[in-house]
Length: 211
Image (cartoon, rainbow, N blue to C red; front, top):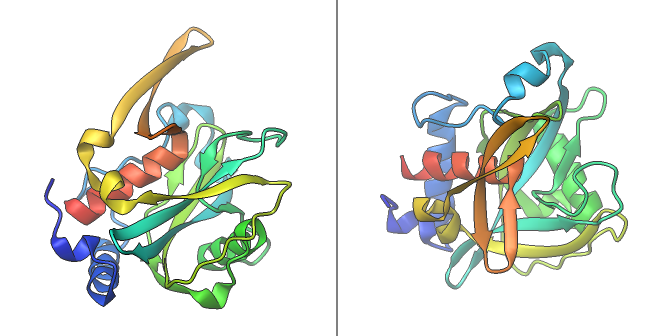
């Protein structure tokens, strides 16, 4: 794993190393072999029919290095129930990805926008369910107190960035749907099964930071 020690630093060096990698990418897809979206997303929806959404890749510096904030969605939701996600949701009218990511993060887990220092945005990720997700990277200095919305969020937890950066943790899984086998990335962390768009975005982020 080609990971500079500064990327795994919890201080200013880590923040600035992440900011530099994100801003140098400039939204490019090809240079780092990034995933454009879920496997089969091109066949599922026309590009102009996709629903724009944004998520926050929120990094919290800890003693062992930065952690990524993730949520476990509640089981009763109509979309992606029970899955592990990054905080985020659909863009509202005349709202950009950064504003949407900050708003949704506050609504879902209670972190105020002024607590989040934005480091840049990544290339969008298209899902087979019809969303075009714009990941936004933010840095959140401790102390961090989570206040999850009980309707949407079952639990908030943190994933070590070092775990996400290690390609050995980027595993492939599949399932059969309507006679077609669909493959996707999985990041199995302890008893967590991080898959789908969340895993794809984390794989993209890892390839950006270590490429």
